[in-house]
Image (cartoon, rainbow, N blue to C red; front, side, top):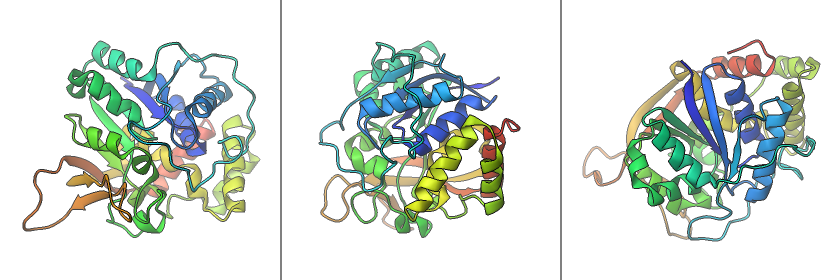
Length: 319
């Protein structure tokens, strides 16, 4: 049986690759894609989601537009650019299939009620849509099987802060954009797993030159998309890992055996000149703040197997 999932995203080239991985995997049944403001305004992310679906001939999957700004704040300026088109300057054709009329928040609510305890939310952007769904329909918090999100930076590896993506020195972009939304979801009754910058931006999430050469030699549209994204990021001085960060979220659902987790208590910093948007992990042996919500945190990934799986899916030879 394939896992029923909703992908809540803000494409973004790595979100786009996460959509490719999820939609091409025979382990997942992607019911719907919901979009949110994050890497780009929601009109752009909604457009990019449909573009990538049409590229891989999966445009039967509905796309619903979500929130156009954070719950209580204005949208910050993203320090990292995904290019003029938001997809590594692949400049895909305009999509033919329109957005559905239903709002993304209502999609999440309706599907959670239709399939109680069967749906996993794969979140690769700010958690605004999910938080508002929980505010509007608190009952669905226990009806969602699990949430797997690219979220946070906890300092369990050096990569958390070396590769920090938010607007403060130790913050992660998805949380930094809408920390109030993250605070709601982290504190909810949902089974929440965070894949943080500690593992998602590890330099081992990168391609060898041999693997890049294989991508360049492929005639697959998805391989061409990823190859161009890699060229775009490398030209700007970033590693190829930046093109596939969000792929770790669907990969966790597809192949959980490649990941290890632990449970930790985490608070979201909602103020502070230097720490705004931080995800603060309580690690003390004594005097710990037990009032903080406890979530699942990924602390290890089999990166070699992950990249082989991703390359297999992109080249139509994998799961």
